[in-house]
Length: 100
Image (cartoon, one colour):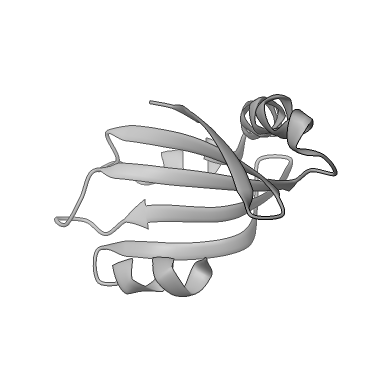
């Protein structure tokens, strides 16, 4: 996944497992000034059964808020919006929750 995201390096500063707030965000995409104005926080979760996918994806969004992962991004004055994404995986199945 990080390999795909690296293609965005000309428009975003890409941080993986960076300490921010009271935890470590899996991936943060911080827009480069003059390129973009939306930042993105991505949290990954692994489930043991497909039935847990939706609830675990919601837990990921709650974790982003609870641990204040947006703290580092707020240091960049040009950022207008922070998009928060949580992805839960179980084998080849995935559930996604997001907040704009």
